[in-house]
Length: 87
Image (cartoon, rainbow, N blue to C red):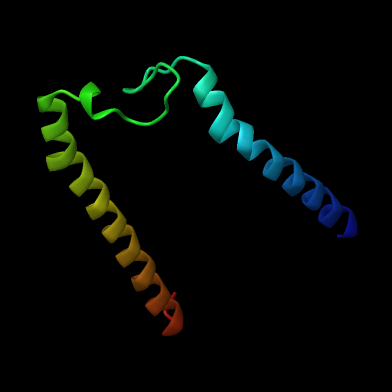
């Protein structure tokens, strides 16, 4: 158990150090296939045309919100079943 804790601690230190280049440096150094590429990982509003903008805000955003609500409701219902010792 002690060896597992040491390996986990070393991995956590390595992962913490690697998060900065992975999220902040490398995306600005390489080309991207996403809108707003050219070294900028943020989405530029000028890169999104009108049909893409409409589909994003009318289908994608509500879809992800509803999926999150559904998963949350499942988690709450499972928790209630565990509390009632039915699961």
